[in-house]
Each structure stands twice: as structure tokens, then as C-alpha cells.
Length: 351
Image 1 (cartoon, rainbow, N blue to C red):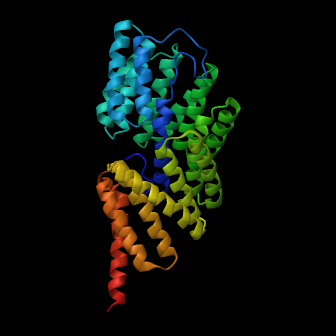
Image 2 (cartoon, rainbow, N blue to C red):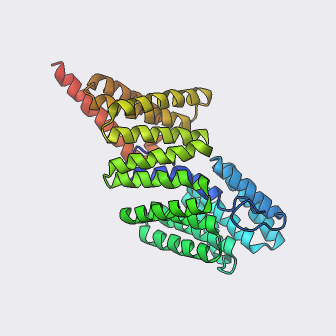
Image 3 (cartoon, rainbow, N blue to C red):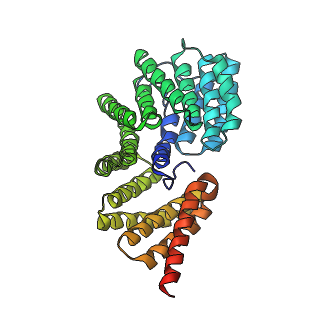
């Protein structure tokens, strides 16, 4: 589950960032025939068309089908002798595996991309560096990931790949040390604003907000997440809008605005429940559980212990359905322990 924010604060910030990686990585070569920041060129080749299709599927979070489409793109590029497209497709096959927590299966694809990648081919090289950095970050090699993304940022500026430079700044706002994350987040926001890349401003403000929370700067976190919501609601998916609303509600709770937090979270819960009823999947169950958990925390903060316990138990049931035990065993253990303490205290009150 890439969107969980139920882990420890530092992990939570990175994972909220991962919510938008499906957008970020999928948008990296969006519109190869001219609607990106690069100049328009000839109609895309067969491999280019398949890359665009793979990116569209990736942005829709259909990672399995995206990976299959990237494999087709790699095969087509190899037949065409289009090395740059071949590198991009191979790298994205690797990414389609890693985002499903199958990084080991993706490594051979990334190694194939590395063997072909050349800094003389900006599109292929920039895509390869992007996925290389993601793998380094996912392996908790923050120093290497930061260096890779910095190289990517500078390379993209030199080669007038401005949208990809914003992407690199976004990645640095996830991978770097917390204080550096703020600097890169603000730099990415300024670059996106200057370039008119509004689609990046939701993700960038989002990650900045969670970095502020990691540092205990909760007021700034709330302000940033409100800005993120503004941009997600301008052009984001329903999923992104839901998570943006959840995030604002959570941030309200963190600054002690419990009534506002409850208002946001009750509405978010109703929406999440509706989405779950229409499409009962682990993803939709996750956000029902996430909203219930926040409502439980609000109830506990207001001294409504019995109600808080009931809400947390409901959250745990939905998060089991979402598979939390597998994708966040530490966070699931923390939630279970919290419930156990509340049950024990409740039993003690009745002795």
C-alpha cells in the first residue's frame, strides 16, 4: 500500500509522498509529441505510443497493466533500434515492480536499462536516473538517492527538461534529510510556479506539509496541506482529493483544532465509505480505516474513551481488510497495542 499514513511520522511523510509518485513517475514523459515542456517533434513511434499508454495506466495506479505495457514498449523499442525509448521502458518496468513492493523482480529490468543508458540521450538518461534514485531510496540508501536526484536535477536544467527538473526537486523533497527536504520542496514549488506546472504543486505542497509535521512544525504543516488540497482539487483524481481532505483533517487534529478536525474527518469518512461500497477493494478499505482511526484519535483527545475505542476497533477491522499487516506491520502492531491498552483500561474501570 503506497498511500498509508499510519506509520511513524517519518515513514508517514514518505508514504504520503508516494501517493503522488504514481503521478510523478507516470508523468515523466507525458506527451512525447509536444504537450510536455520539451519542443514538439514528429509523431511518436510505436514504442513511444506504448510508453505513453504505460504512463497513463501508471497515473491511474493500474501498475500491473502499466508494467505489461512498458514491457511491450521495451520490445518495440528494441525492434526499432530506439535506444532512448528502450531505456525508458526498461526503467519503468522496474518501477512498476517496485511500486508493488516487488523491487527484487524489478532489479534485472533496471540493470538492463543501466547497461543501455547514455548521458548523450537526455530522455532515456533522465528516466533511468529517476528510477535508479527511487530504488536507492526504497532500499533506505538516502545518501545515494539524494546524490542521484541532485544529478538528475542539474542534468535536466542543462538539457532544458524543466518539467523533469521539477520532478527531481520533488524526489529530493522526499529523499533528502528533513531540513534539506524543506529547501528542495520550496525550490520545486518556485520552479513549478515559474514554469506554470500546476500539476506539480499539489504533490510538492503535500510533501512539504508532511516534512513540516516530521519536524514538529504542525502549524506550517497545516498551511502547506491546505495549499496541497487546493491544487489536488483543481485537477487531481478522486483518490487524490480524498487523501488531501484526510490530510487537512489530520493536520487540524495535530494543531489541536479538534472540532475542525472532526468536521473534515466525518466528511472524509462518509466519502471513503461511499467509495468502498461502490468498489470494495483493499485500497478503498484502507481509507475507510484511515478515517475511522483519525475519528478515534479525535474522540480520545476529547475524553470520549469508549467511543474512541469503538472507532479504533472499526479502523483495525478495515485496515486488516486493506492488508495493513503486510504493508505496515509496525504500524499495525502499534494500532493493535493501542487498542489493547484501551481495552485493559476499560476493564479496569469496571472492576
